[in-house]
Image (tube, rainbow, N blue to C red; front, side, top):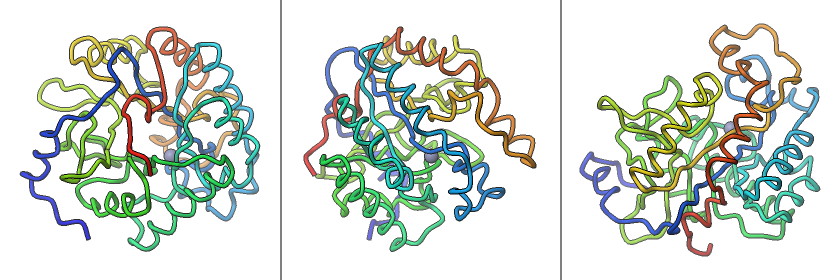
Length: 301
Ligand SMILES: [Zn+2]
């Protein structure tokens, strides 16, 4: 069992330098889930009803693959087992095009709302399925909603034990639904003497706190120039790789609208969907992107 953390432990996380690929590369990541599977809709759409919704994942992932290919970019696709089970040919295409396949769990269950055994089953099942489909080792995991934080650090222990080499699940910011602002902003080794890596999505330090700059709702809601400026700051001033993420449904303004959502959820989900593909295009043109496992070399599973 992972020992409870003291602040001294957390501070020690940043002490050991992480091996990063030299150069200007950044990690581009896609969380492969469909619009009806997002956490904000969980109160409206039961998991048992997922199959009754029009699935748009295939066309949206194809669109992403075309954008990446045109830009000469590679990325890491954190994929739900539920999606992989229904669209194995799509998942194989992602791997065949040279992108990294990683796990986003099987059913998009938050890691802080399940037992240790349920978590272990979920991450092992999704890993084996993605490996069976692609024929390649799956080394990475991203918890739905960045749901690993000070409350459930045992999850890192379970991931390491299940053969994962890295996680990208702790977001070192304040947010109403997730976050561990006291964690390091850049990749770190959470276990002394081990190679297992935690690779947070990008944030910037300003006015005494960490602000998100690695994608998600912020990328759609705030001006593109702000994301470009903060990512450039991390690259040019801090000399560290950026880690960016987005979802296939974020480039799909034609997705069916879900009714009866709380206003905040609806605003967060639907604002600027029609602009996001173009914004991703700007990021692809401005920065150089690669798979997480090449930007942060990870040990063999
Ligand atoms: Zn997700």
